[in-house]
Image (cartoon, rainbow over all chains, first blue to last red; front, side):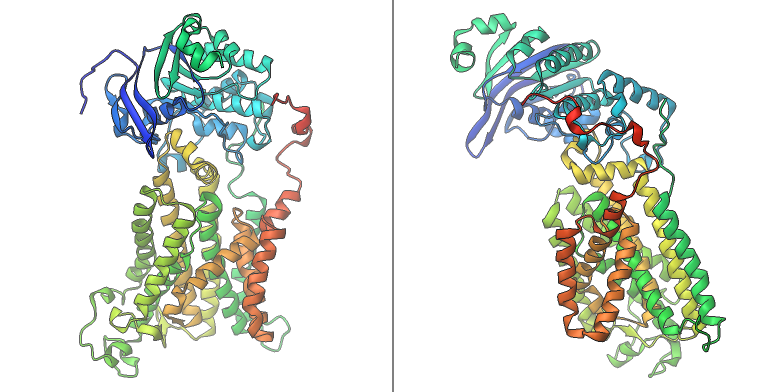
Length: 251
Length: 383
């Protein structure tokens, strides 16, 4: 229905509400992201962070509200695979990789390109694809484990493999849910660095609890609470907000 | 630079062995049956040719089931329906070949229609006097049914046990339908008393040997097709769907299209198996639709090794060999033995015979020296 560009924003959520059995997971949520931006989303458990990602990626349909991507795609009318094809990639809270595939095949499956049945039946790995796989394997530091089954990776390595899969998918917008959960401090710092590098060419939404990590990212922060935006701004600004301290930081 | 073909050979070691054995059997068994005199110890009696030929069609059914279950996680408890539909298509051709040689000597109508006082051939039977048309139907009818069922089920995201129940209900509905005389396919007697196929007497040892050889080659060919599918990138997508369906959607794959494709291909293979089965056993009746048949096929695949293709074929032959022995020696205990076998396999050999062997077999493709250190040596995250 939306043929004309209605907003300059990459991602535009307006008045989005979602209820599950009477529980309002999202309550009149509005959020605007500019192209090329990286945004950190924080908030206590149950604030609606994951539900928001579900709405953006088509897993959950909002009861009301608008969700627009690149100003012209109404995401509420599309399903998961259509939204993924538009260029929105997602990393899950619990690392979700294909365990019985090798590291390399996980990346191959994510690699931007053919998604059709017949095209994949006849698919042969091209030189360009091989180079791209090598490049991603180096970025996520899994080159020497490329033939290992993903099931045999450590937790942190699975997280990185999944970030690698996002890179392979090369979406315009990456949604990253708790990327450093269960990581060591060193791994956490490396992941922040990696996301900053990814942000040079992609827009990124990061949901995270780890305040050190959010500080490392050094980006605009949105605080969610009870399904709507409580505060927005730099980490220092939101940390100074009394309401934020009350519901989240000061617990 | 590591050298690892993404397509690790088209067939693989086990697969090459299976195809070689099948082609060897296709040549050897007919020769030992037809050319070696019955007095020789190397002679293969015709009833063995028929029995082995029947097992090969079961093996083909098992491979088709493994393609959807082992690689895409679709546990079909109604694959026997596709097998039976292929069998009925072949049976209808064979019935039309009887012509005026039937008991009632009607030039067109099969005996059961004359018996029911029908005067015209039902539309569904038109064209079945032509072998190519019947062969087309062998693939088309199971394929279309699978397409229709899959279209609705996969689009509505019916998965797991719910899908299994739907497939089971499908074969049960067909069982009830085919039992009825007015359904037009011979009622509970089914189709039988076949005379000849393509002009060759169906009872002749030469025809039987040829059907055996064709069954072996059909199995080999279907195995190669299934193998090509599962080793392609499409096959990797299927495995991804099996292991993490929603993750696959978030990568942009239309899961329902992939499931539909593999389900239809599998149904057509099952139809081919049924079409080769019917001329060898000489009858097709509604009991082929019985849910127990489909469940038995699942047991063959589980015993041989789900997700291995070769294991499915092996499991079908082994279980049916055991069944032949049991039904001769201890007929009343066969179902107990089958149930016990399924429980034992699930508990002790969850990967089946071939899956378990493959697990302990050294893998030549993977350089052991480069294999990853044990997990404890890898960097562990803090919990």
